[in-house]
Length: 493
Image (cartoon, rainbow, N blue to C red; front, top):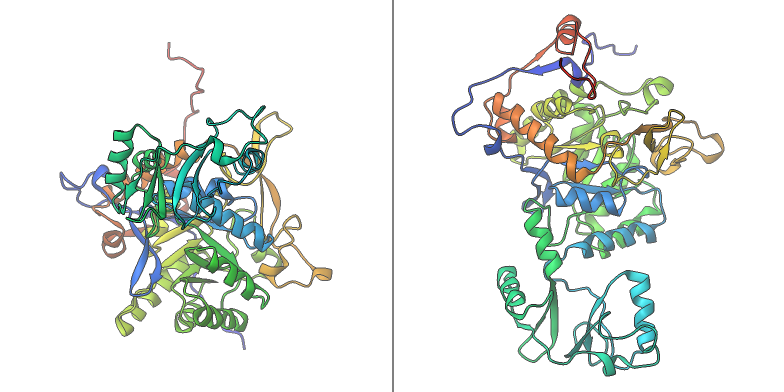
């Protein structure tokens, strides 16, 4: 006979966080939102803000991954694309802000200016070190920029005829601050770093340092490059994809599956742990048994959520899923028990059912370490969906589920192509502007929530937050009621 649980499953929207004591030094600007994304060896991959953009075609491309990492989170690139494109996007993100860059294009003195013009048109780069062999780790002999030649007349010239040879370089420098000082001293926007023998070791660009100063809370790797993650499926052919992602230096691999409590996920986790040295986030699960299954397999973080995305129809067509609040409470308790038994803390990623800063705060209070969101990030200019005008003349963004007919992501849902059925829809979401303009306000809202709750950071929130379920009438009272909002163009007489 089937087991029936009598307790109701709850949404994040049914909860409110009770206020606590806020000391004088505990106001919102003093609250930290730093969090643990996942385990990495004996340490962690950390984020300055607890945000992941969903591994969805309509959400995460290079622009979103770059913007979100600059604002302290991380973008997860979708699996439903050729592996070459996925790896190419990783390369774009890693090259965007490199600190000490070690993988930039170099020229040979024997190349023609015509070939350089082709490279500039293809990549958008405008500054190139010139080495004896054209390889990166060779002796530096010059610098060529797009201002050193005339595109109309110099096509047939060699790089050696137009490059600058009055080199000003840093010798075995390891400090970005020292590199910046040298660039200011030399009045240059580019500083090659060489060994004592003149072998090119790395390069620093002033524009990269400026970006770092503008976004001090960036999510960066050990080489000062932006963090980026990538999704794979549980299909055996994605083992080659995982290897390629590893070779292109993805920071984390996320297994993209609607149900993580399966033999297929176990097989993929076992392979990943043996074959590549990259942290693995498994999921999705909504039960304590599912959590234990994944952590025993060796994952470094667990995604929580099923059937509660804004356009997801899984619960309607399959009747499988769970309210996100109940899933988080159940798994957070299992996570804490696991930590007590083994001494191993496994971070949780809340994935789905989050549509407002209030939902974000509740999910974090219920035990999530970070938040993966699709609909929320799809609304911004930097998302991968197209900007279009709807029938009412409004500018909106295209948004579709990975389980929709448009995505046809049979890899995620293990459907047979000939009998594919939808577990999600395609549609539109409002366009709200740039992530750079809007996300800092959301971050401030969450900080304010923690401050009101008397908490200084997310670990404090996990341990000390007091939440209360609300009745339908209480929830109604918490919304705007008994008045008509004033339009922006209305004036008070």
